[in-house]
Image 1 (spheres, rainbow, N blue to C red):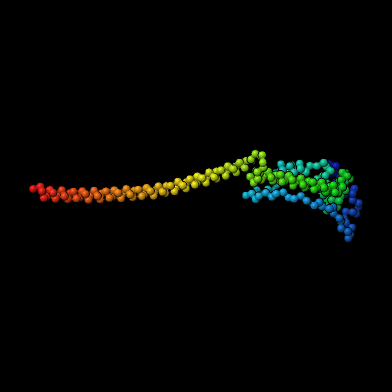
Image 2: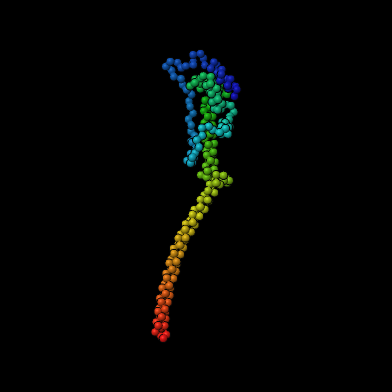
Length: 227
């Protein structure tokens, strides 16, 4: 892209005549038409809890995007590089884009419709790549299932979490059953103890009554007959 950088530095003198740096009085500069994005945005991922706040993209993602936008030097990405180069020299607004377009056309022979079509192709490429990444991301989080694809670590951990929750719920149910069984057993034990104590008390009463009666009769017999 050094040819574009060098061309950008000389473009002001080459493509703009003296006095053309500003629009004529009463005549507004006509900017280049801007491409209309026709690509529809990809699916919005579900609201994941505690989503991290990212202020700087990772280098691997920047490299990936750069790879997507790599062209043949005669496309809209190359034109944007030329615009940035000329912008660094002080050009702004419509003059910047008109100058860059004139320089770009002189070097590449591309016309405006072809340039705008190239921009739209890159926009579609970014949207398609984002959709693909979101699909993989949703698959990793278990939101969707891609056929014939091995489950990722997040899906495996999610499955393990669900299984452990089920096991915990089953253990809680069993614990509740055991608690109810313990209460029932304690109630039965209390009843049996009460029964046993009542039975012993009844026996003690019967035994004491019989013993007292025998003792009374033995005393009477000894008193009345043993003379």
